[in-house]
Image (cartoon, rainbow, N blue to C red; front, side):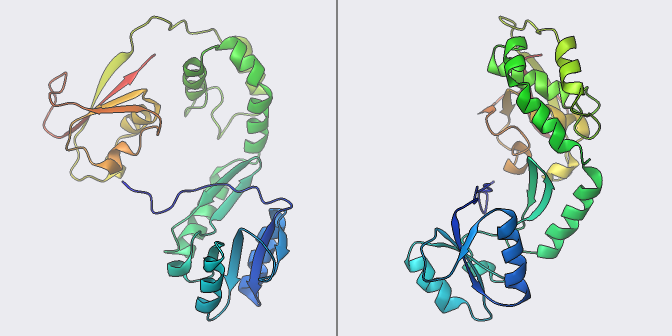
Length: 260
């Protein structure tokens, strides 16, 4: 499935951003840019990004794009090179929710749901994991080992479950960790049959979604839609299998390889 836009996080502290316009919309964008530490400038100055909050932005946007400036035009997604998401801030954890300009209200509603779910301590947990990088390398020398160990620890109900764990539990988990010793062990091939009434990834069971998200390699039949495969890690190896390695009921079939 093709992304309609690529989500990125821009560090704007001390960098110029054009803000053109007046009124409530411009004021809201000014507050957002101030939070990001940007230096707000006008159209006559140099900047790589611009936010245009005008009732009739077409000519202004055209001039800016001719200069190579990336533009966000408020309430005009057809003119936008980038959009501004709804934000859940648990610094340094930042969750951005975008709809490509389709519905700011929907993005805001999702943000409110996530605000109620994500604990205030989430940022402290992230900082603790950052501070523990040297210890993680010592306990799990190989990158794949670290990824899998963290994946298990941060999973639902795990010792570092992000919805429940505190920063102090990182050192406790590391102290109790034993290197898994998976070197030389053949990856376990676990078959997951996706028997769906539609190609909707929401029809995945929790277990199937978890296995896809953690898989090192995904083997699938050609009829599995991209929307399902997008639930796997972006860096997981993928290949198409003509004949499934085990017999399953009829339906869309995916197999995942995981070194456990």
